Length: 472
Image (cartoon, rainbow, N blue to C red; front, side, top):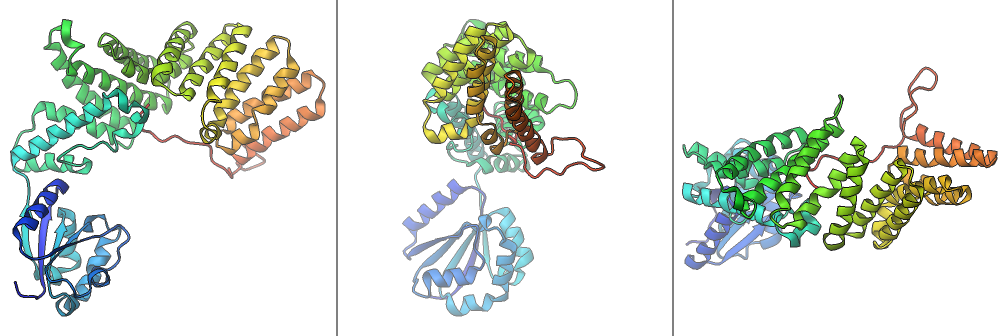
């Protein structure tokens, strides 16, 4: 091949297919093959090539990553303006690997440069696309049902290797099958709905996807012998869907403008547990416990909350973390306080603090609000047990200012309100006044006070907000 510039556009939607093609090219092509990978901050095509390679290359240059460039249209427009520089200074073939969108931008932003190119399109056959979607589904479920992965359960669905197709390519493969007139297997459609739910941006959209997927797996289960259903992968997938449905329902209920349907959330989580327990999968049962505890607290079902919290303690000794165990004891303390069992509340709150203290210093600092909550519970118990000075000491230790600084103003205000009451009862009026002033200061900083004079206060700080994620 003569040493002269030529441009080839290789359109390919799938990273694994690109890798296979490049490997085959290395084996078949006698010329040197160089690879240049662009990142999101690239600004100029020709300049980057010259800076990296100069004119020393005597083979073929493969350029990857154009689709990741933040301002790709601008980069391509600039390349179009200096297109003659490629002919003058790049005496070698350049292969630009592009996606459909990158090629569309190339046609619009660099029509002259694009007109020089030889174009080729690589794709997978229908059987390959189906295989890729099936592999992605199997790997995702396998990872989520693997007990060794549970310490990172809340993020692993974002990172797990899906095999032939990466995460963004699954939907592309489905659309390509449809464009080819190929019907998607119902099992694959159900798995795709599940994946879409995991990637949803809000709880409502996630819930719709999860429920669509669950309906399919439930129908599959009904066609299986019930004596063995819970031992099958189908049964575990059904339980996993119920778990995610419960999470999405919780997020919807938690943000509802009308009366939230906590009973619906409870049923979903309990149904998931009822699926995992006969399958002897306590490692999956434990995933449902923290959210079920919160639901039971909202329903004020104290006897059932005590049962689940004790179950959580046993499970979290094997599968959990000190923070999870501290939360279980925290729920026990809350139950005891509601049932006027002051000594039991004192013991549970103290144990919650012991468990939380087992976390490394950095994690404890991030969970300062939890420590404050357990100290508040302990103070409430001490007050009822006739130990007001100990209760005051616990509330001071709870550090309302630190809790507020980390974005939990309403909880900080609870600590200060309890502290003010205790100071007032002990005739420490100046200290009670200071606690009241600090509470008002937090209200003002976060805009919690409704009105001041003729206008509403503008908050100078924002409370901590947890965006929707369908995770534990």
